[in-house]
Image 1 (tube, rainbow, N blue to C red):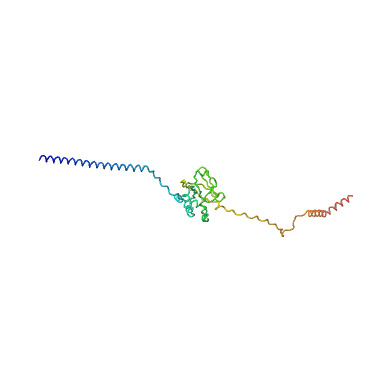
Image 2: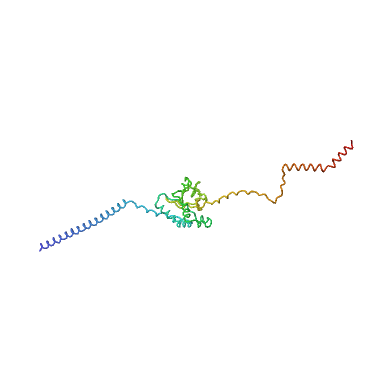
Length: 278
């Protein structure tokens, strides 16, 4: 009996040890799993941070293409110029050149008041081709900054055509900060710089730039010289009062003869007085 109790006691004791050992192994295994989870998480975070820092910073998206009408609409007071740019389709030419060329453009934009100052009917009297040339006359085919006006060579070429043959001359002179513009008909100045982005420069002018080829004053031809009229003798005039030398002699003789005839009595009396004195 005593041996049976000792056997049971030893069996329970062994079971307790096995259970404790088993619990220890479970806890150890759980701890290892937890540690492995933390390690994997830290490794992932470290890898993600390293990859992100190694990538270059993304550059800002490039700005949209420059649009001349949008620039003028934002500036205000250029509705007439905008309308002409659209109706002549010059605005499309400008936008295409800005987006497909590196030379840039310079535009002189007249205000609405500048167009209102033109004589009535000026724009309506122009043909479609002349309207295109008028708008192109306000555009230089390269970018010119305010400081570069100090050194430009006159006359400047515009998109309207050649400046050296007297058709579309545009002369610009800069005195200090003032930039003067002359077309041969109009003299004005740049009153404001509206826009500049390294590709397009837009300047405000307070007069419409009128080119000589379209607005050259017409000169009336000089009248042909008239041939001098010959003076015809008038039949109503009397005989000429002028006398020839012969006429003068005849007149003198007549006067002398009349003198002696008028004094015959005096002569006779004188002769008789001399005779009686003898």
